Length: 85
Image (cartoon, rainbow, N blue to C red; front, side, top):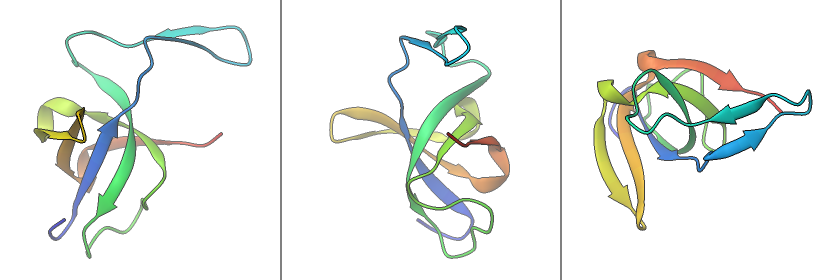
């Protein structure tokens, strides 16, 4: 990845239940913040690292296909949250 960009792989969250019992569903149109898994980071990325799960707005990046799954190349500033489990 170049400069401050990250490559984020789509996480399958068709219907997932949290420990508190809340059912999470993924929007089909990718509007708003959706979860992803960081595959690669550029040399100027400061706040996230490979392997973390994050929320991001997919509309701000370049969508691509990685090993048959949807991924996006996006600037770090468009990541809205880091998911800690």
